[in-house]
Image 1 (tube, helix red, strand yellow):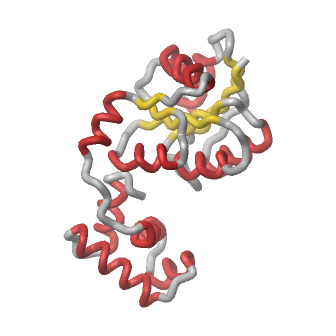
Image 2 (cartoon, one colour):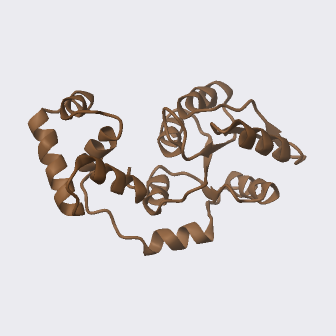
Image 3 (spheres, helix red, strand yellow):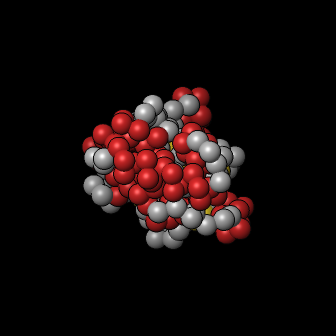
Length: 200
């Protein structure tokens, strides 16, 4: 039996996936969770063979949760998303995510993907892969991305600085560089652009 845990903050979708995948004779469905932080805790506690993680979740997104899960247990992760922003696939592959599928994937196909990753293969939906291959490369440094990522939830430069343990002047420099490279005039625009591209 392949032990599977699903994390998705949309209860109806999570329940439907659990029910449909539970019809497969070789899949055992573990109790699901509704956010990325809970997914990490449940993965450590239950050690599932495969976690199917929604990309957009509260507290930690699917990629960040995948990174923390991989650091703790030998669980394979499949990311499931409604909106496959171009850079997200690169982030996911960098974290050694084993599968990347759209939420429109039929349950029987998802079951097949689960079996594929359990057999040691990696699966990326062809349309998502094609989009990622044609997308522009991120021109920003890792530190600039960290600042923009923190800026999505922080209301001031001081808050970003505190969160990242940087001086406010350093944060302003990173923001200025990022805005110039992206051709935008505000921190919010820079963060939104980076998010839409899947860089953060």
